[in-house]
Amino acid sequence: MPASRRWAGGREGMNIDDLLYRLAVALGIGLLAGLERGWSTREAIPGSRAAGIRTFALCGLLGGTTAALGQATGSAEGAALVLGIGFAGFAAVLALFQRDANRAAATYSATTLVAALLTFVLGAYAVLGDMRVAGAVAVAMTGVLAAREDIHSLVKRLTWPELRSALILLAMTLIVLPLLPDTPVGPYGGVNLREVWLIAIALAGVSFAGYGAVKVFGTERGVLLSALAGGLVSSTAVTMTSARRAAAGEGSAPLLAAGVAIASAVSFLRVLAIAAALQPDLVATLAAPLLAAAGVACAYAAITVTWRVTNNGSRAPEPATFKNPFSFWPLVGFALFLGAVILAGRIMGERYGEQGALWGAIAVGLADVASVTVSLARLVPQPLSALGATQAILAAVASNVLAKLVTGAAIGGRRFALELTVLSVLCAAAGLAGIGWATFVAGR
Image (cartoon, rainbow, N blue to C red; front, side, top):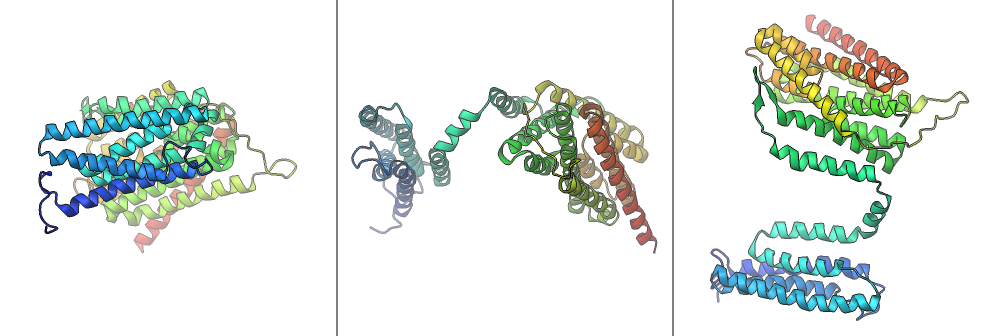
């Protein structure tokens, strides 16, 4: 029989080579799961386990073979019947063996049973569906099985505020977000409720990430790493989170301000990257002020973290005292405020033309610089000139720096406000110097 001959009774398009390949994937899935199960019980007495590496390999192959037999019936009803009966019989026999194994070991674990059932199902799906999906799920399953100790340790250390915050963040992302319309509401382009909710999710996510980073890496590294990652999403969110931490005494104001500096530097570089990708003509004017401001922000963070000393000359202690990942209602309120600011900026831009674009960029920049950069870059060369777009983008960056300063000063307390003031003045001075340099070079 030639290898290219269609598999008799099988699904359309499947040949012998394809079937054998799929059965090999089903066997591989079982071997992968069995390898972890065998390793985790490697010290057990042979014959005392309900399922090891060989059994799991056979489970995957059995699932694939059962699916192939169902396909060979030539009808969807017959295939479903064969697969259903095969799975039920397999589950019943395996459950009996697992029950006896639990009684012998005086345990109540169902992990091996569930893993074996899933291995059977994945083996069947490797034959009936997408092999890549079956393989990916098998890897994920094996990862969960292998991370047993880490997961149990995490659950023991997990506090109620952490669990509650994680559930709220997941609900915001997976339940509420899909229900919101992705269309503007209101005049002059209105406000996209989905975008406003994404701001709230970004604020909560940055705060939660910072909390987790501090628990894993310690206060100093955790604050700086979370600020670096948060700056890619929203430096405004990092500033608000840091201000709230400073007000609650959950870390030193200088260290939290250093995190804001890092997030700000990332934000400056992100604006430059967006402009370079969408409208390279803007880079020549934007590069000098943004790179200068980013360099000063990084220098401020490095000096604050490295050279900050106490009165006796030793490094200041940074206690890890973060108490709560985030508070829900303040985040939602701030997101709504930013949404109103965005709407006001759009109204000004629509009503007053090119001059309005400048004022609109300043207003929207209070909340988000990236969206302003994207919008303005797409308006070059018409109806905006490259110079007009550059001025508007830099104005948006300046208004964002001012917004972070005001937010931090209002929420974070005197010391944090002082640190942010120094940072903002230095960044503004560097940006102005960069503008002067770019103007001088352009005029030569």
